Length: 67
Image (cartoon, rainbow, N blue to C red):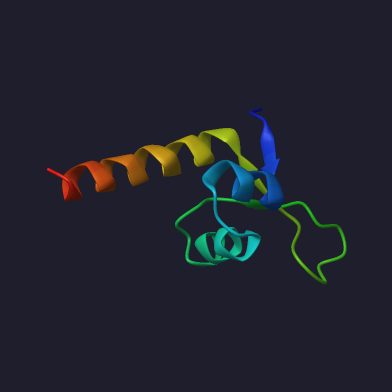
């Protein structure tokens, strides 16, 4: 299994806020796993392969915009 990243860690890596990461998860633009045990509030973890796929897709979009 790949490494799982927390919302704050992903926010720091992407240079965005934690809320932005949560929005990306909610909009299904970034795949995440809820690891909470109580179902009151989700505790999201983002698999490394999902983060890398998101970064690649974002780079492709930016590349096509600047072409």
